[in-house]
Amino acid sequence: MLQESGYYWQVLSAYSQEMSTRPQTIGYSLTDSPVGLASWIYAMFQDVGGSHGEHGDAEKLFTLDEMIDDIMLYWLPNTAASAARLYWETNKSGWAAPGTIEEP
Image (cartoon, rainbow, N blue to C red; front, side, top):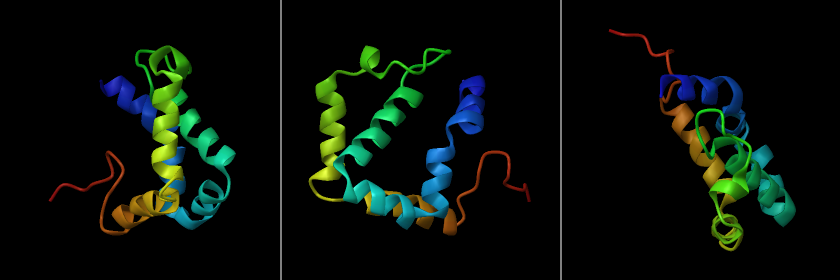
């Protein structure tokens, strides 16, 4: 589990970092283009789906309907930008990366 969390932080945390520092930048592209939103979410399914070195095969772990359902949950109500903004707000309110919180 620790190895997986290290892999996530070192290799896959760009999603979180982008949304926690520039939510409007990514928000515009995710709400303006259905292909951009689908690509962003599909890439996340590829990257975070699976474990123990089995990342990268989204369609092995999720059906196409499951992935399209997830994409549509952001596209239809136009909530991709507000979802990205949640990362920024959490970051501003004191969320910290693992290992960066100082003990009292």
